[in-house]
Length: 448
Image 1: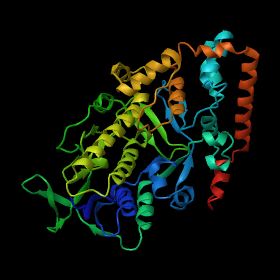
Image 2: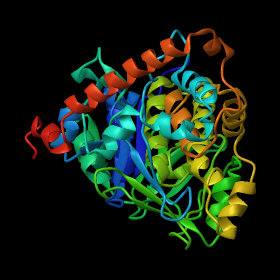
Image 3: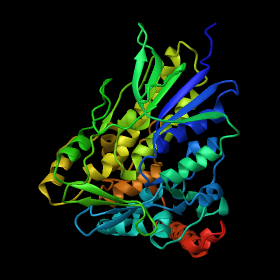
Image 4: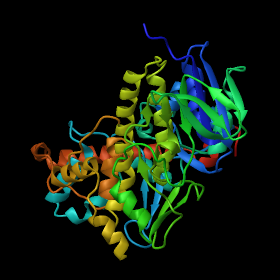
């Protein structure tokens, strides 16, 4: 029987290594050694992560723990200027809106709008049913568990927290001495004749051995080794004279603004197989998708979760590496679809933004747009990083409207549909009225 790997060495910036180290410490058997080499403190910058992220659930970290570490909370993101200069929209994570007689709400609304000869106002009427976006715009905040049998169940809260504060929270939750902490910089990885990493040499000459090496080092050019997945939209954006300005602390919600001038340089890339032999490259060592929707941070937390699912690894590691690389490729694909949507669907007049619209979107995004524009359907894929309703709301917000509705909606009496829509709208209005303000919400954690 192949023995299990008995030691892990993680190295990279503080903000990158601790999300992985914390989950490994929680999941690996007590006898497994974990060593962290912190190469620096990273960049202090806020990120927005879903409060219901599987990573937080795995470590049993909720709103109270995050609030104590300095997190604030929001119900959506602000997208500025993507539909044209001066425009504003809210992209809000949300569960499904209430169905009517088994039909999705947007199908019913489109049927009613067509019969009333008001298809041009479909998007406007639909906006009134977007509980999460309306709550976010009004500075309201709540959690789904506050009233699980009400429209509150649709809420998809985000935790907005500085990466360094989150790293400290994760580090401090590690029980007594489980992880050996070192400061330094890994200058070189030494390999044996079979290509396995045998040890890591630090800049000061120290040499560290382990069974598994986890590389989280940042590189402005991206790693030299490994095949890369194509990311045409992000690559075109990086080479253009336009960009996206991110401000995670603007107002209540994280804000992403389409800019007519270049943003700080980003070299987008994603390795196809970040786990090779006994070396696993995660976070910035494996991909760079950019800050839109906190894609880079979300990928790191997904990778940490998937790595934990593949452990404890055997010394041979072939099966574990194959499984992890599949999960990694799926996560990159889903996140690329998400960050690519506002780029491909933008409505700005500048030539560079028009050129982005002309670039073929990732396959999954193209299928979502085609299916929704054709008949209001929304396909779902393995490893989704955004709910189906989020995609529906986002496409409608960018004026991707269904060309036809589900014909079952025509079987109902228009007065019945009007009454049903009125009841749903009434429930949403009641939920909004009952939802506390941001300040009132934070008072439960001792924060005004």
